[in-house]
Length: 142
Image (cartoon, rainbow, N blue to C red):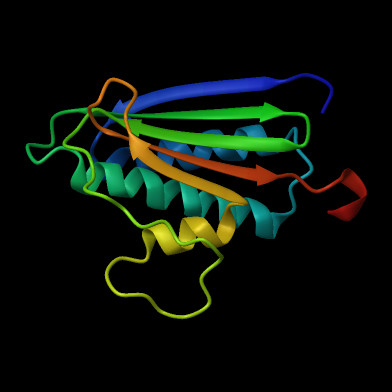
């Protein structure tokens, strides 16, 4: 892709809006060398990250989820941020997961799909930021 691309969206932390994150990714994917399987995987990962924010960030369901897609060269970075209650210390798997894990599978799924996964407290000390990075295949490897 010749130019860098950044797309940002924000939506209420309600399950009804999760589809927006997937639709935005589908639109971006039209300009990228993504095959159907990789696109489906990335949609799953972003849905898991956004779903975690919707389920856990705001006990009173009042707040927003922000999603940014940043394409630079042969990499797409997906950031999912909330300003909610934040996460306690989260163990992000070091390697892709191939066996069932205790608790929710969201982080394990994201780690398996992403080349890099980082989960941290938001920049102002509130909320949670999930950063997933995926190297894009070359156009002839699709």
